[in-house]
Amino acid sequence: MSISNHVRVHMENSQHTAFDAGDSRMFVHGNDQGHIHSNDHAEIHSAHPDNECSGVFIAFGGNIGDVRSHFEQARREISELEGTLVLTSSRLYRTPAIGPAGQPDYLNAAIAIETILSPLELLDELQRIEKLYGRERGLRWGPRTLDLDIIAIDSNIIDSERLTVPHPHMLDRQFVIRPLCDMAPRWQHPQSGETAADRLECMITAGETPLPEGETW
Ligand code: A4P
Ligand code: MG
Image (tube, rainbow, N blue to C red; front, side, top):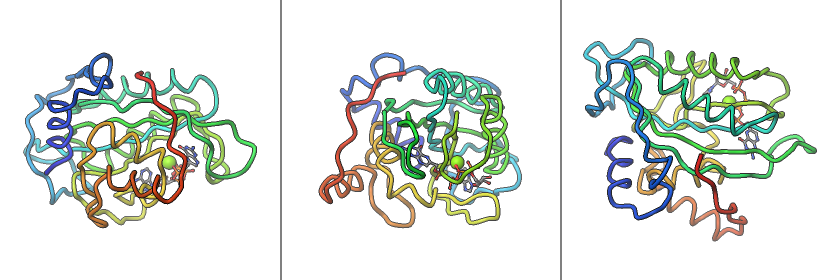
């Protein structure tokens, strides 16, 4: 099943309050009317000629400045991209930094979108938005104002110079998997075959501390 369908089914079935208030907002912009087609053969260099949409999870992270406001503004910018619809948002989590020691905690969240943009067009737009909110690339895994990572694009597997999808570290990071569980717990990783919910359960069973309850944003 596509990412969009997973998200829609979960939103319809879920009694979870995450989708009751802010998270149920739907933004419709550009020429996308929310019609979904399966897209397992997406070209990564050009937008789909027949306006087929891809479903995409985008992870948000940051630990410098007013991160919550960066997230809200970035979500708005993404909703205004050509042919792009924000389907839903996860909760917002405070998470201990992974990487160089001495960094402040991060905020992490994720959104699910549908877009007619190609993967590389979307990456270009996300990097443009990161820059708008003061992102500077320095130390690997160092502190940052806003990091926007493409986590998955339907069940596509991409391994190119600029883009690896699914995101190579996603299965090890509760700050990615937990937000995915809010939006599409039954979505399956195209390589490991695990669902987001199974992956989260494995992490907790292995002894990871569950993240504290998230907030709507
Ligand atoms: N790139 C390749 N694949 C992708 C993809 N799927 N999505 C390339 C986005 N970009 C992708 O990214 C470096 C290059 O990766 C890009 O130019 C793009 O062409 P970057 O954002 O400049 O560098 P980065 O984010 O420092 O590197 P990396 O390895 O992506 O780091 P991560 O994995 O994003 O980790 N701790 C907590 N608690 N929460 C966090 O969010 N984030 C990081 C960064 C470390 N520790 C954290 C968190
Ligand atoms: Mg990144």
